[in-house]
Length: 274
Image 1 (cartoon, rainbow, N blue to C red):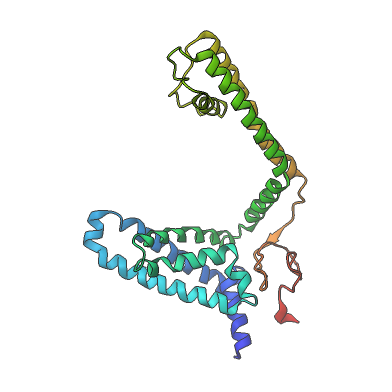
Image 2 (cartoon, helix red, strand yellow):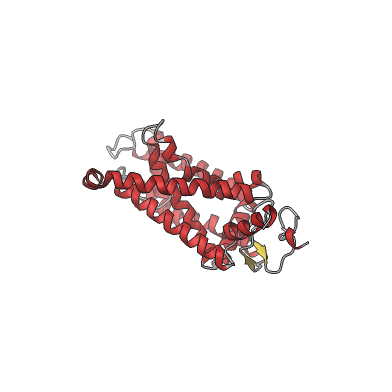
């Protein structure tokens, strides 16, 4: 087996979840991630750390070395290493491998190992839940498409809270209800408008309570507005069926079933089939 075929074989195993080898690789990877995260959690318990500290340290070193080898293999087999290194999972893979090494130079950095939990997102591919990843991407596109409307809406809400906070300051000032300044009144308006209602500041005058009631009712309507904006954008987005095939060049992983070319970079998804 020459180097090219070896890299192609490893690429299929490491990056694809549609083959037996790919599934097995990802399942083993997820088991190691779970063990690693549990180790980090348990070693923060003083009695367990005192009794099993050396065991925790050994487990963490073994997993760190395995993850380091895995990361280097991903870089090596990738046709565009830079694209992988700076991709979402590439950054997470790197961050999950370095904390143990950094712990010798920066105190407490080993706790960053908990970032490995983010790698559990790979379970979407293993369990054939790629449509959910597609839905997440559609939501992202909808948020980007509606960002200007949402920004205008948020600006209007900010102006509204300033006005309402100022009104409540004028109404409640001197009544001993906690509206001692406009900033505190604006804080109350934000808490009330979002229906959080901490209760640390509350109006005591009849007019103040009436205004507060109106703000509470208004809050329910305001919460629904951004949801409607995003939902409208999502209905415009065409739904397509995606698989888990990863582009070897840009590492895009949500392609239409039967796709030959990557919809992101335009390269062949299976260049070795040429």
